[in-house]
Amino acid sequence: MNRIRLGVMVPAMLLATVPLVSIGADYLDSSLNEPVEITRLKAAWRAMGNERVRFPLDMQHIAVRIGPQRQLFVDNMLLARADNVTRQVHQPRRHPKNPVFKAARADRNQAVIETVLQFDTSPRFRAWYVSWDDWQTLDSGQLIRFANSYAVSDDGVNWRRPELGMHTVKGLVGPNNVVIPYGQMQGVFHRPDEPDPRKRFQSLVLVERKNPAVREGYYLHYSADGVKWTGDLRRPVIQSLASGYGVPQNGIGDTTRFWWDSLRKRYVGDVKFVVSPGTERCRGVMSSDDLVHWTRATPTMMARRPETQIYGHWGFVYQGQYLGLRWVFVPARSKRHATYVELDCSRDGTTWTRVGAGQPFLGFNDNHDTWDASIMRPVSVLEVGDEVWVYYFGAPTEIESKNRALPDSHRTDYALGLATLKRDRFVSINGGEKPGELTTRPLTFQGNRLHINAEIEKGGRLQVAVVTDDNRPIPGFGFEDCRPLTGDGIDLAVLWTGQPRLPKATRPRLKFKLTRSRLFSFWID
Image 1 (cartoon, rainbow, N blue to C red):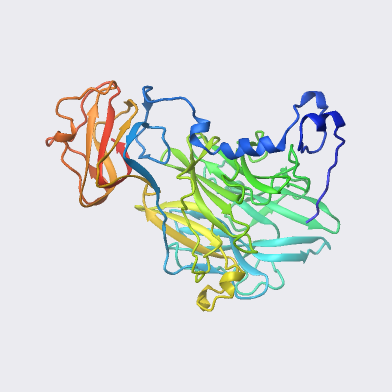
Image 2 (cartoon, helix red, strand yellow; image 1 turned 90 degrees about the horizontal axis):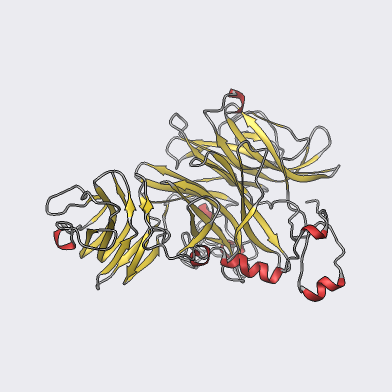
């Protein structure tokens, strides 16, 4: 990569009063900026993912409006009180056929999956991925790095590489499925409502070039079908981050990802920042309505523990809110950027908080006997029937490669993995042998039937009571009136003395009593 180091002069008096100052290019007069103390900046950014720091006001007596979507317990927004319960992050089940897609076993051939999208028509699943990890020479003599290819599947598990024959990349083995012979497609969008049929597919492609050297950046590309792409390489939409890692940052990092926010009808840039000293990777967010004009990037979070970093992040819309999968980088584990995955969430797509901090969503395999034991990086989350499918890419590190127990089918470069869980089952609120209780804030909603997604152990039970906004009982809707829920179901109807309808009350609260139970979500229709 071509790196540009930008230096500035810092007055001696400023250094004396504000230690460990790190600033970027001095393109604004100093009178327009406050000085930045990096030590305090890092502490502040680490705390940004803490829900209690971001939302310090006690909201238990303030009403909240909920829609028809299923309400998850990933944060405390709906809660007024919780006693004798715990929050558990649930790990999805990794598919037994993993890796479900991989490149040919040849030098520089790989499958770094960038995006998997789901369609109503065949092929129902389509993936774009970086297939070539080296420099190549274009006809113009320009050196350019990487190449992007295309794969399809009708069931999301068995993938094939269609023979396209459009671009030739010397060294790639197998069907010629290259769609862009350079760069990394860091986000692919399908916009069937786009008025221009030539732009129904869109992508921001990270491009590196030299001979002559060109500043690395993200370039906008369009396609009618997701296969034949055109792009303007004259000027990047957004510049890449060069060395210097000060404040302000002089670009966005190479693990930035772009995704579509279907709630607010906008594109989101899930931005990589790097802060020195220490070269700590962290995250930010920016948005656009056209992939050209962008809001100012704001920080979202830094790793909770200083011995880890946030290598990447993938956000997505789920049931009226936002969930995120954070790639937690543990430098001490291996030489190849080992990452496991934690969960976070947001209600507005801008303010993100950690979920079950420290609990993995996709965790390391300390037996080191699978291809994804040390590297897991999610890139797409899809709702498929009654399941949630998490697509991620991974690869063996030097530790797994030296392990004789690693199966031959797992000896690969970067490849595609699939992990699944039942719908809504990212997180549960758990009650044990001693019953736990959970009380919501006063709720405003439409509908009158309450549904529950829960797993109740043998001998356990889950009951629901409805009370007024000031916590007074409503006759006929106490715990004693509720038919206990048992078993395991993603849609359990709640009944009170045979009555399936919620009472007519102004902003009631729900109270859940959990005995040997896991509560994942509820909704009202």
